[in-house]
Length: 442
Image 1 (cartoon, rainbow, N blue to C red):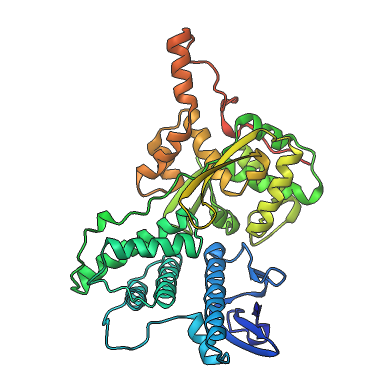
Image 2 (cartoon, one colour; image 1 turned 180 degrees about the vertical axis):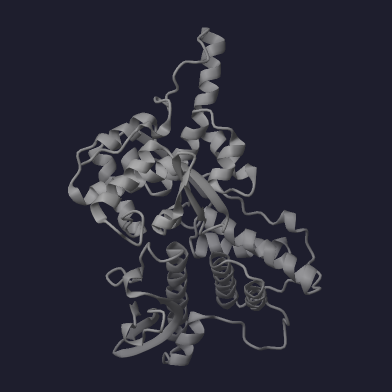
């Protein structure tokens, strides 16, 4: 059997979006069905049969395609084991598995998740939140179909929860943080069932375990920034480097720098600021443009003339691939140890696996946001001010960056134990201001 995802460019809607179809080949038989997903042709990678990074929430959308492919494969194995012929109706049912209408049990978390999503849509929740709820519903439906067990919120207990976790972690081999995201969404769903649908949930939601693990947060020192700014690069990588540096100077996410327009720049007290509404959180933020950040804007204004976008930002996946090349040219070769949890062979317990990689291999566009936050703290910016610039609604989110700035504790120990002054330079902050590192004209 062969599973393919194709973009039907012959069925473009008024917004220029085309439907994504799944095509399955069985021993001379060909079946196809719509996935329910749409995107513009420029947002689709035909070679990889997945959404490009420029598509909103591309990672989650591609996870959904992988989930569908896994469901279809499981369905085909069942059909083959029973000696039946695959049908289009069976394919469509496999794409969106639901619990059959049987007398018992009466309730299903997969079905309730769909109703919960409709409620959230009516209440105006953001697109990425609705997509997360849809993904949760698909995982619940896949479990119910694979195990033949509908998850009834009225009888959902810790034993059922552990069975669900084992399925996600070992059968579907989801990463620990993906499992934790499913659990977090499940708790929201169960709370909605209890508080708004009047269903008596028999367990305390705080007992549902699925903790996030700390992913390594790579950030750049002032020396790294200087090396990037001074690196001699091929022409096609210069724009990639400049966009990264601009985000290091402003703390912008990729989704926000992608949509910057000249109208986002305003004059303030003899200088310039960026005013925008963040794509992810819809929070309004105002960011002062330091000299180096403004120099990047002026550089491309002079080169490109009048334009719709402020900076030449490429698709996210293209940017991330290019950043690794940029980092290599800049000599960011310092080894970084990466630790991750993996299921041992045979579906056993999770084991900590540690590997080492040069820093340039770990560079992504989000590295810039970590860099801005950590460098701002190293240079003395109050956490409350950093919170406003990053657009965090909860200061606890901002304090995560304070935990990884180990230079603070090192400086204090050196001052106390070796009698050195508090004004000694930090390893991370070699310059007085992060934006003192201006981009080269290369």
